[in-house]
Amino acid sequence: MIAKIMNRVDFGGLVNYAHNDKSQTKRANLLAHEGVCITDNKTIADSFYVQAAMRPNRKKPVKHIALSFSPRDAERFPDNEEGDALMAEIAKEWLKRMGIVNTQFIIARHHDTKHPHCHIVYNIVDNDGNVLSDRNERYRSARICRALTEDYGLYIARKNSKEQNLNRLRPQQMKKAQLKTAVLDARQTSNNWESFIAELSKRHIGMQTTSNKLTDKVVGLSFSLDETHSAGSRLDSSLSYSNLCIFFGQALEELIFQPHVQATECGGGPTNSQGWRDKDEDKDKWKLQQQTKYKPSKRRR
Image 1 (cartoon, helix red, strand yellow):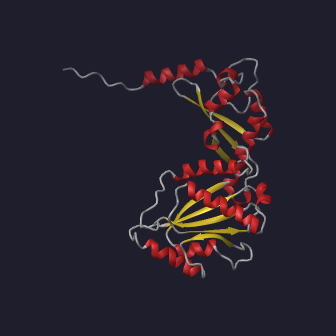
Image 2 (cartoon, helix red, strand yellow):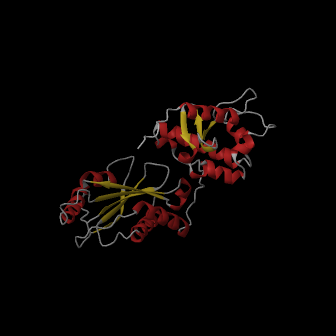
Image 3 (tube, helix red, strand yellow):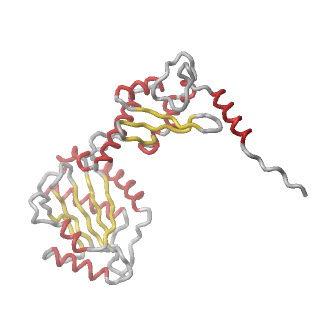
């Protein structure tokens, strides 16, 4: 279960989207509502507008929440009164735990995707004219979603889940998601750097190192698949260089400079004739560069 939180300016268009009961694909149906007239979408939007007018300086009084569940939970949310009631109950509990009370809202379910989901529209201006706090709302929501998932016995996806709906991602996002999944899979099936590099090679993934110019120590890793490149830490926190060192119980330098280990395409930086980086040669070059730099003479007083 995940909640995507969005800020909006206009109630009218959002209500028409969330409660689009005329669309054959969405087949939206209203699960629950509070403080609005539900004669039609116009009266719903007008109800929101009247209350938001108590805070005319609030530029974005509209909150839109897309509450989504795993496709594996589809059996828990059948297209009937029982499934609708459970989804409405969870959505209301999410609102309550988020502190979204004493205000107008609607909850509408859509049927246009494989995963069960609903849309919540609520007024950030409550019934007394106060503005509901949205401080740290995304962090609080993530914690509450995890708790609700456990409380209601919903499916908990693995961190390296392949069930992400890639068809809904943009091309570049899709490639990055595929790279992330492949690297996480390689990490999961490896117990040291050598096997990790071998698993990456099987998946046609390149690994490049980033070194500190002064100490020549590896400080970061990046991965590439075709034309997609990304730092390990940006893909996932578990793929940062420091976390991988902890996971494998060994720093990458310990592997690179062991003479019995063969060179791979994953190494970064210049190498010598044997395929290994020559640290002494690099340091000599650095010292020479430092000596040739212009140093201003001390000014006499």
